[in-house]
Length: 531
Image (cartoon, rainbow, N blue to C red; front, side, top):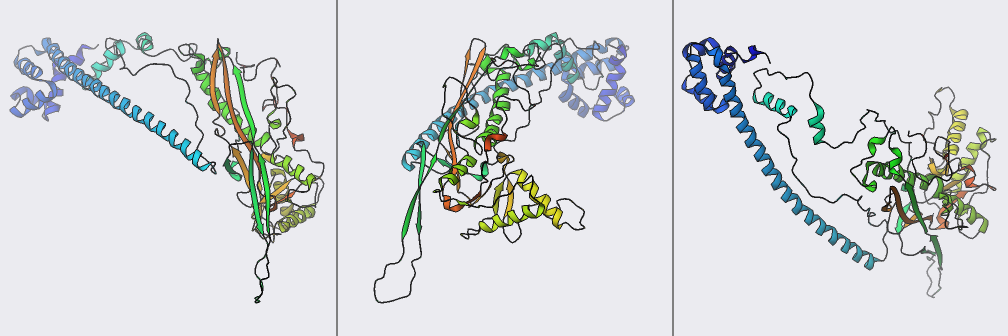
């Protein structure tokens, strides 16, 4: 370090600045009583005594190092006291955290007991409590204080700088040796700097969930009864003339049992662009790659499968081999499948509109006329329906047709009817992602579309993560079904010969159109492109 930075003149300037005087004044007249007290409070009595001695000495430059030694000693004591106080508070906080954790555990146990009691007393409740999602497994251990190696070069430099902020201390070297720092932090990032950015696919999620009313069920079938009555008021007479009839219609919505089984090997990402997600100090089921796959990929994909393959387009198929994985759409009957079956049966009570168009060949006028006709059809029972569910393909074609016919000189495409409202009706078209490019139209009162479930609610359905050697197996299950609770309150247009599943891609296909290179590779393995 530069000797000039440690000159008595520098120290004299620091003292003068601290007491609010000039260096020449302090050098000539010395320190006042107030100056002595101020410097003692800030730099220690030893420093003040040595400063006065050196100021009056004949050769102060030769002994200015003694003053620096006094300063270091003073601040070392203060730093040690501050660190001791910090760890004392940390110990107190640890005790408080342990006490709070015990209270939380007790409250959670009480909550579960109350939920069980409520479920027993009420049988079933609409909506129901939120699903309980087990916490990811953690390594056993206990809280401990951080061990700091105060002798490490980087701590020595930081301590000296904090102790002497006005002395302009310089580092002994241009760079710091990272060996000491590396010893304090476990190895996590790749040593070759090859830490790739993971760009996941875009997930839409279960976007139509808000269209459904959730019902908690205990059995496979949700049964309800629709009670109806006709007119009862009549003109008065003195005779008893009964008028009014009751009708009770049973309704059944089936709940299906679903699961996820995903397996992968965390070690597959070693020597890849994302090997920083592999942590050798953890068990495979606790590694960052495991948490990444479950939280960032699997859970969002569950919601995507529900929206695009199951809730609307699903068609239940019996297993031919229970040891072979099935497609998501084969695990339940979706809304479109139910509408097609109800129209064929003719006894569901659903009101079917019998006018159809082909969006690919229909003229603009025909599209508008079809939309108006269906909207008027939904007024049959004066239910004031204001939303007609459709595919984005139908809604877009309607807006384009309306624009072509009525925009006149506006010159702005889609501007005059961007909300897809329908003339002479309070209704508007609402696009449902899960309907894809379907020609089906569906309108009903709010709450008539029902989604059933038991305990677990999507996507928090993972109930176990197991490890076998270096492999990880992820398990999850849930019960869910969808349906129209009261058919008489629903209106639909279902063209003949329509197959909801015709537009679905292979469920083994990735969003980029590729498939796993080796069909024998277990679902969920790392696959290609990580090396």
